[in-house]
Length: 64
Image 1 (spheres, rainbow, N blue to C red):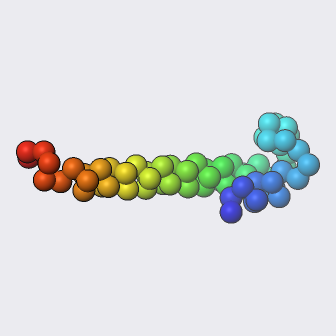
Image 2 (cartoon, rainbow, N blue to C red):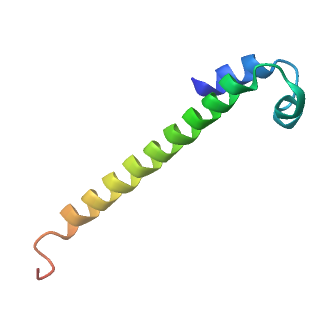
Image 3 (cartoon, one colour):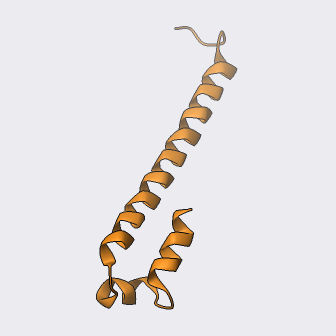
């Protein structure tokens, strides 16, 4: 979702060119933050699922 918005906001410019001289850079920067938050949440979810899966697989095998 955010990626398409970033492309639409910067038009034909690459990111560095847009950030240097494009108009309305604020919404673009906000969208970049949204992308970062989305990736961080995805990574956290994947790590959490992996951790819980591993704990379930090892339940009863190791002393607590």
